Length: 375
Image (tube, rainbow, N blue to C red; front, side, top):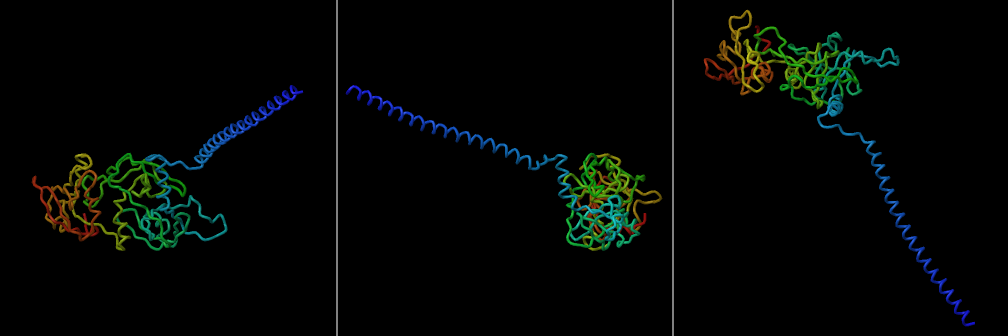
């Protein structure tokens, strides 16, 4: 009997030990399972986050590479197009679709140059409206504007028109006097159309070798013909010139007297020098930045290079004098005498540096009005 009880006690102890071991094993399994589950969840979360990062990246518009064609288009859309003006013959509010304005009704495009509504445009918009501003309307960024007034430039094909309405987004001005052939530029040729083109060259378009000092000897030539006269933008969306018909274009600095007349509320005026000149650039083909000057030479049919009683003669200049600079601004391959004169008004007095008989001299000259000079 004692032996039987001993066997039962051993059997119970074995069962108890097995039970304890089972509890310990279950606890360890739970801990291990929990650890593995947590690790699995962390790995899953990290993987899921990676997928979301990819999805998020896919919804973000990538930035254009600096200096790329895409960056240029982005700059033009953001900074240039809001300042482009489309001109049409005036329309009436109507429900008849046949009377609605169509994109092919465009007369041309202009450039907003001041926040108070002054716009640089081509004179053809006036010619097509019978020079009646009430027969015209302008559209900027989807808004319609009436035209209040205009100022014409007597020496170019351009005009400043003023729009009636709230403040507008004006173009930023880019540098136009240092551009050379090969530069990429952009021109609007439709409400939603921007044409990329290039400056093929800026060559002489005049047949005469000797020119009046006030007459710019060069114009830009674009790589493509234009359907409409329109502003020219650089790759940053800045205004640098204006394209005319037949791929001819004018640098912005050539049009500054017209723009300034609107800004200052005065008639368009050009400084008069009063002499025929030969740009030495056309003879020497000197590189940009090299001082080359402009020589005073008689125009065809003139006995002297100087207009009688004109500003140059009154200042004491003579035939064959080589003009080097105006108020310290050198005449070189990048800056003609005519271009420098655009910075001045009739009545301004400047210092002229010139060469005569191998001696550099200086003289003061007071500009007259270009309108008063007869060559």
